[in-house]
Length: 152
Image (tube, rainbow, N blue to C red; front, side, top):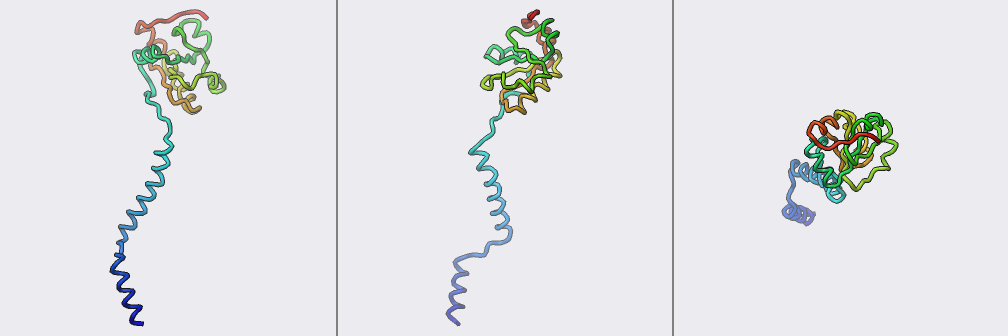
């Protein structure tokens, strides 16, 4: 029996007792690793674009090849629109998102900037990552002296 006691005391000398806070830190680090490692290995695409851009930024994006998506109604479009823009009224957008390219930046526009925010959010929920809306809409675009056209 004395031998077992000697062996037990020797084992304790080689394996120190970890205080409770040490175990807690270890468990927290394991949990953090379980969350962070998958996120680092499979990151979500994050848009580098702000939620809204001003007319200067929108014009620059357009010049770089961004699609300008107008979400106003056809009557508003005929009055005035940004050259080269694509018209999909806001009420139809959710059903027509597959018509839009996912490999291009999309700048959503409307008359004053309210509907374009809704349109941007519809696209973001549909998985578009490179999408923003024009602050102030076509009114701000025209007021800045940027090109517009009328008619169909």
